[in-house]
Length: 291
Image 1 (cartoon, one colour):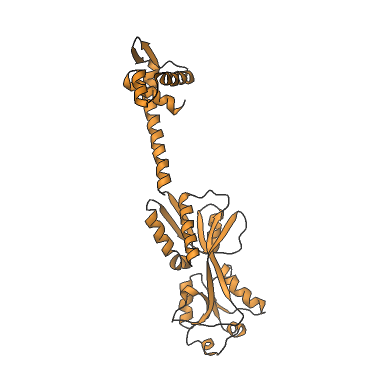
Image 2: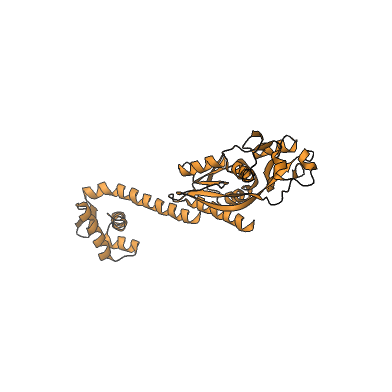
């Protein structure tokens, strides 16, 4: 059964004849007759009786007519939905991200996305970057915007922002009084860092480990705003992102040492991304080209 034959059947039933149906569908009468014949053959049932010049529905035709109207209406609704899909982006987009990235990197692309695609429903989940990786891997979210760490197939990571990290202390911290701090000087004082299993902790710890130095940890927490607070009141030093450096803390430059994180998005290579996800990634890429 095809839609063209079904449309011809409804047109003949509605207009009471093949000629009138042909005019309504802008076809020839033989074309309408052929479509009806094909439909009757596929259903193995006669749909019309030809009584002279009059065409009337058979019992099978009367049974089919309301169902044919419903099928054609549903087909039209599907066509319009697909048209809408081509013109606008809707549906649900699930994104996992860290609190830090959500506060300092995502406001602009999120604002732009919601303005461009008001029908899309954003499901934003805040968590550690390592958890965000796991959620993408297990299909619980479509996209993660995180600190990037080691990435293996089937996951794919794309860098959007370079995120420099600076050793920072309170202005009245003992380290702030040194004319020039070294890694050994910094290691002699307690630190506050994200948890040892996090990508950021590993970046900082590896720098000290390569010099044969160990870290003294006062405490760990994955909330960068809490870390900055502890630094600003003089309880510890830390490595803070450039976006968090202000007058409350003092940066300690260390010759020959540059710390940096890679921030970006992670997707599952085996998943077909929704148009909403593709649009959001496009906005992230605009951010990458402008930063």
